Image 1 (cartoon, rainbow, N blue to C red):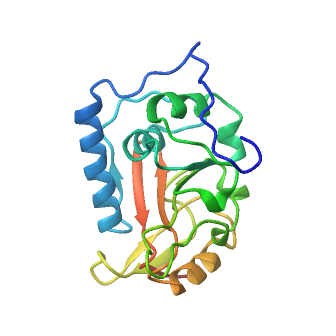
Image 2 (spheres, helix red, strand yellow; image 1 turned 180 degrees about the vertical axis):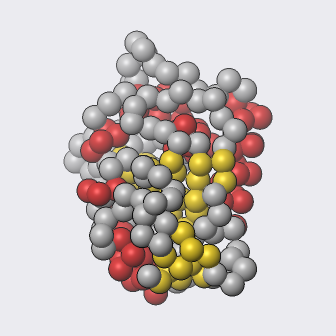
Image 3 (tube, rainbow, N blue to C red; image 1 turned 90 degrees about the vertical axis):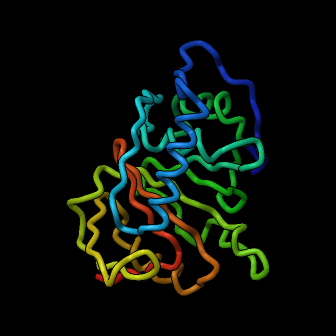
Length: 207
C-alpha cells in the first residue's frame, strides 16, 4: 500500500492459505448469514465455515471477505492485518484493491480495534447515495464480556443488551455521532471466531 492508491500487487503464492472448498455454496451461505446479522442487530450469528485463514484473521472475518469483496470493492486494512500474509490471501481469493486511505474504502478490516481510526475517518455515503458508505469488519476478542450497552432500532424487538469486548473506550461516543448522521454513516459487523454481530447505522446505543 502506498500513496493512498489502490494496489493489485501480485500475491506471493508460497504458503498461500486456501479459500472456500465449495466457493459458490459457502459464499451463498455466508451471504445469508451476513444479511441476517445486519437485519437482526445485536443477535449472535455463527458461520458454518471450516476456513483456516492466515493470522490474524478469524474464520468469520475471512469468510465475510471472501463473500463480500471483489474487484470493485476497495478495502482498507489496519496495520495488524497488513503486516502478515492476509493481504496476499485477500488479493488472490477476492481480487479486491487494497487502499491506504481509510476514506476511500467500501470495506475496512480491523483486527486491533484498540488502535482503529475514528469512525468519521471512513466514508459515510452521500445525500443522494447513502449506500456509498463503508462497512467496517471489526474483529474483537469476544462478543460478550465487554461493557453492557442497550441497543434499539430496526430489527430489534424493543431493546437488547450487547456487551462487545475489546473496543476503544470512546467507541460508543463515536457511534452516537455516527448514528446521528442517519441515513448516512458507517455500518459495523463485529466478528469473533466464527461468530458475528451486526450494528447497522440505524441502531441507537446507550450505556
